[in-house]
Length: 380
Image (tube, rainbow, N blue to C red):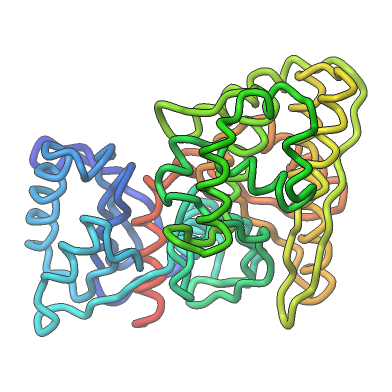
């Protein structure tokens, strides 16, 4: 750590030299700033949420400090509503080269940097709640073939609508009913499981209308939202107070499973030049387990194992197609220690060389490091 103006900045050695100094302004939540020049980068402390006035004030103070270092490039996230992005775009395009960086590419590159990888091609697995894609859609369960400069989106989770946008995060049952509707159509209301008994049928009819019309329902390929949907179904909980609340609880009970368990089914569908992971069978088989009164610990474990199996299966396909054996795991979903352990076990058994975060977090607090290096390498 290095102390500058009584603020501690993490000094990070870079595996590739950044010739033009870059200032990256990070994400909205778990925000950090990163200044990179030459062989080192400096990562600021975390600002938990830039919607909070004090966090945003601290962000602006550190931005002002780093601007005195005369960066040539300002890097920021694609999402236009991030406070960090809005602030960066207000800076002079005459004084600075402004550089928008895709969220999940930045996740993977941050992990590559931490592990000292040279500018090589890797299979990047970036799982989180939300990140704006280069197609202006919501991403969050991404398999990228990438290096420090560029990426291709090679596979992702099947998209479902976020009914009511942010309300789908606060009320994850909205996600669950869509998956059940996709599997069973209207018959899901007759499944007889506890989750269904607690649904407000009038509210479902409103949500169904939103789904069919597409009103206020952006599509998302988010692994965080898949965990929310599964957890809502298994735990019979409909609302949360904070993001990932139910996913954390699902992991907790899954770690208590002492039974032999196999994964659930899923499909991989090739569409043009990419693969789509369809988890519909997961919800069908979870429902069958619930009807059979299987232990929730076993169901939760089977779900985690299935996600790890998805990762391994797609990585095997991409290794064969691209002749790449290095896999990089990043994104906030990998704060789930059970998922991380299961994924590592399967990948190592298939002979992959796997890289994860060690000192830095896999959450958005490392995004700015990825932004800085991508922008710096592109300008070299």
